[in-house]
Length: 537
Image (cartoon, rainbow, N blue to C red; front, side):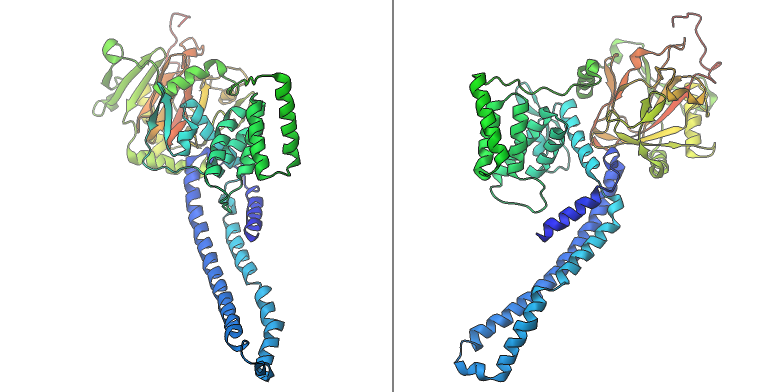
């Protein structure tokens, strides 16, 4: 009971904290340090409780010995006033002090006080939901089996067999309660496609554990069966909903609501005849038209450009006819001609990448997207970002100079936006979008320097799996290449947006993805990136 009180108290604290931890892996890593502190606090609490229990055991042993040795003797024992006095004293005060001791409450209060010191750095319900959605996103985009995720594996079915998408060096298996919470998040969004799959695993694991109960769990087998039965009912599988409800009644035969559901399901089955389940259907998407292509590119990288088959796609040492690059030319790889996409290998050093990340960390905030004339957070972009200004002598200023040398463009503010550093979260992604503004009311025009003519994105960290940049209409994707930078033109020379630059940041499967974006605007490039004589270009 005391543990339940503690959990309820801690849950109340969690709801106070604003939930954005899941949007940045940096914050998730910081949470590890917080839990280490909590472990120390819990160890102290356990030590104090063990000391308290030792005192109780000592009292128990003392009293038990008296009843074993002294009070079983002749009746004359009670005639001894010392024996009688100690008995009365024990029953009057010693038992009272033991039974009503405040020591347990004081130990618990000390643990709570220590916990409160860390509450500002703890996740809340939004973080839990965001992390669960991240798992479901990875499940969908990479076609992962829920049953394999539960075992700590990343597998998909290919030609009827389970194939490893990636073998992580370190992993964990999920518990029945873990799966229940993921399924519950989907259930509460009326996303029964995902709730069925995760709650099935939850029920299986709870069944396997028998009647064993863990005090830290939120869910039980009864909870899983309850949510799973209704999820199947909502997908049209009434017969299985009935079967699960009957199983639930075996554990809780007096549950009136479930009894009513059983009667309802039985009537529906009689009226409908043979079962006709509609099956599981994925929830609709705001970008359903390109979802299949997007996910295929994230999984397979699409129709990759074959450099040996097209001489216009090549690798070289690039100077851009600039004397500053003669002694140290850039390693250029032309990835695509339409849209024009170039990869510059080893654009930054390890030290520069770490310096940029360190500078950005204090300013990281939830990434936003254009929402009319304003900006807002959105589920289709899960990351945190910071904007870095730089002088000519700073690391940011030096990167600006390097970008200008390679592109020949004027990247000084306001002709180029400040450097945006982004850290992706759990299943972090950015669904298909254009970097250039597609509406006259877009916040992009607030600089009053025109639209975003070009994008220069630097990969500041390696990613073990996932995280590719997918160009949807052009049908190819570029994997994360550590310390490289990718460049493309967003606009045609006539100022019109290039539809082939519709792109997405694929969800990060394994790894900590950091990028730095430099968006360059039209104004200031009049002599660097001239208009063509052909108005159609």
